[in-house]
Image (cartoon, rainbow, N blue to C red):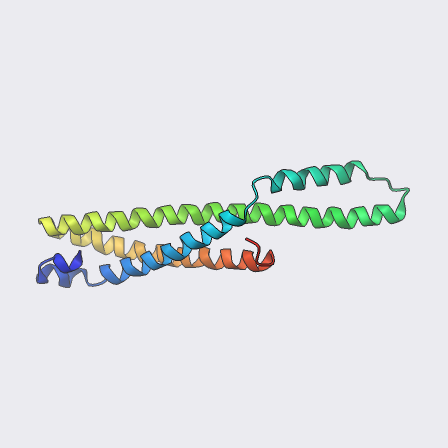
Length: 160
């Protein structure tokens, strides 16, 4: 789309195409990561963990020392799993919001380029500059989200 602009206008928006392409690649990586997270997510996992925790807490009997120690260890493990699941869900929601924000930024960049092509040059150049800066910022956020999703995958044993 930038190539369709007159040469004088193209020189004003030299960073738009690389920023948009970089953002697009990061969006693709984030989308793929979200697909993997969604594929590995079990909607009933939280309910199952809560049920197991409740069951173990109900069985607590301090007079049964050996069984009690095993129960405490199992309960600690289940609570760690619950915290990890809550954290993974939160990160997934944040990544999804970033993905939507990036898609909107790309759409807005496209509209501003169209506006520039139709003649609103002074205003469009300022907006494109601002959008280019936002795209770079969003790209950094997407990189962080993809990294976080990968780290979650590593912590959960590669099971996303």
